[in-house]
Length: 626
Image (cartoon, rainbow, N blue to C red):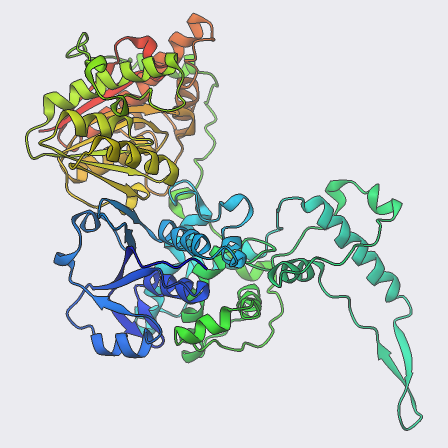
């Protein structure tokens, strides 16, 4: 193991303690992962959110195995004050990682880097290391684990007895997820092994009963033992770092079986066959739910799969030890029979915000009928004149690290990126004042933010991006330039809650454009945004389309999605007529967004970048609060 001194600070919220956990549950989850990984690479700070926290109890009783420090909100580094906890800050105080999934994945990676022998820790990230990597806004699974289940359990624990009779809907949702067939890499092979095991079990069970002789000489009938679950064998052979036993060659009938006829795989752990970070996140939550349910005398008959999962997780090497360190007294539950599907029907309705629109009997496919429908109501795509179409950055006199061409970008692409930046930077420069905070949302490698930080030294620039490698590249470029007015936050947009004056985003993908606009409106900040990936727009928990009242009165959700899909048809290799329709669809989708923002007392212009050839996605919003 490499010798290392803690160089990063981990900040965890502290609202109260209940039984054997610290709340909010995100804090208990973070501490449980640290215990499981046996990680002491971070200097840990607890940040009380109220005045009634018993600091001595928390420090001695629940965190005796870790050195922790208490810190008030006002003492937090500025970059952390702009984020939701948990958060990790690098030694220089400029690079912050915020949000549960981002922080947990970072803890795992740092633990493995410090001690490569801990391969079991790296395995928590799952196949291709993507466990809980997708942000909660686009991944229902990440949202369930990271947000919905912790909040549901916290609400369940704090509800009055008369209001906590029913099992939370999100817990029932997890129960149903555990009952779904598992899809894993190379599952065809495992499913064939399962079919072979099932046939072997059936053949062994044909005699039904075998005979044994007791010591007293009496002959008794004994039931044959069932073969162990293949899924269990596969899962635990990996956990114990063993090679799975050599499978017997498949019989011809097994090899000839169609994939569609193979038996499905059952869940062993939350994401399927293998123990992952999702199980680490869920265990402290489900533990608290079960403890409270047992105390209330609740019947868990509707949750047999969660109960089995809870027991199975305890068999994973290191889990009980980590639980003991966190003072979690894990329960032993009786085995429950799976509940009939109809018993869960009352709870299986899709949340209102995700329900699909009813079928529109008058719907006609294609963009032209939808565009005609809007035109008949006087709505057409319209673009404001560009405020400074000929303004360009003097790229030749800038350090190479400022230019987007720095790196592996081709010269043609670098030129187009420079042209895109000319448009955004020109708009921002007209809005910015000394002392302003400018946030570059979905910053990627920092092409926009680094140029702004270099050209506007009197402003503070914050880069927000959820892809770690992109943000690290931006940080390296910033360090090369010696910029002191820039900071970096690896987080999903929802975990940023800071105040700022101008929000900017270059090619924010799909719904991300609407998320950026929402953040700017909440902060009463101006915005300069270039949208992208219109085809990825869809209704989410937070956003419904169309966005504006004017469009809602005319178009259904399905008709609006037609506009979004065709707005992506602007690639240069497409026929000119098709590109023109794509540009008009882009304009209509963005007009809808602009009108929605104007409801919040903004003046919004939709502008085409100059030259339009700089990108197939060449629209740009400029929004100013009234």
